[in-house]
Length: 157
Image (cartoon, rainbow, N blue to C red; front, side):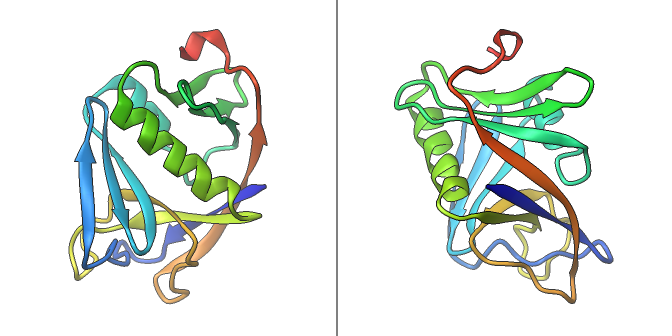
């Protein structure tokens, strides 16, 4: 399994979709629509560190599939770990499991920035999709390896 990351060509991205829903938790805005699922950090150190650099960093994505405590974590080359860990929030547990299902349901998951706006301005939604983005707006970036794990490093939790 792997993530194919796509970079914006000119700062304008595809809209996330006309019909989507958004759920907010303490650290994330979660988007759900026909394009897939997207995330955007609320101001919290952990979520911002997971989000920033996601499309360009040399790291690995670790996934723990679990009914009560799922996790999606970036394992960086410097030994640092930043992730989305779920402990007690039902909404976050449900959202994380949906994100994990999208990633695990395909051999290669396209990930790219989309916009809340229909003209594609201010693309900030990190979108995990089943649909490859437009070649006109995006260029393929680095592959992000994905690995299923039983345990996530304690410093993340």
